[in-house]
Image (cartoon, rainbow, N blue to C red):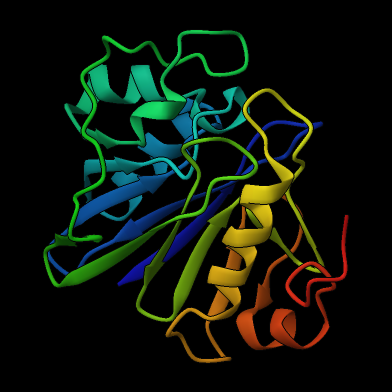
Length: 201
């Protein structure tokens, strides 16, 4: 597995990622940068984009989705609750997307992705674990958590989701890769993040 970090445009600077498998396939997580950023990285690594995973449907996390699908035919996975066709959630309900599997697991070549539903920032937010990495979207940030005052946000659901994240069966050295700002480890967040410790709202 190889991980490539691609930053979205200023001022939101969304963290987006390509996860490359040993077989040369790629998963894009929250592709919001220019399409050329992904196609260039794919070409440089002789990889083919086959999947797009969305931690949630906000506009600053999905900007490159439609064009990447048109160019590559990649399969998109997103919680249906975040496909609304609105300004905040631009992906339309009729767009050809797949819901997350009920088993909570998806395999891409040798990689197993584990999906946990973590509503609170948005109704369809998820966190995605794979090989010592946790793509936490806008659920968990380094030292903080996502907003709950946007359409579809819920403080009560965020409390439950953060309790779930704190108790995930993942080691403390799991790297936390949030949707914005810097990276962290799950151990550091369990130790010092006031939102994971329940000291909020």
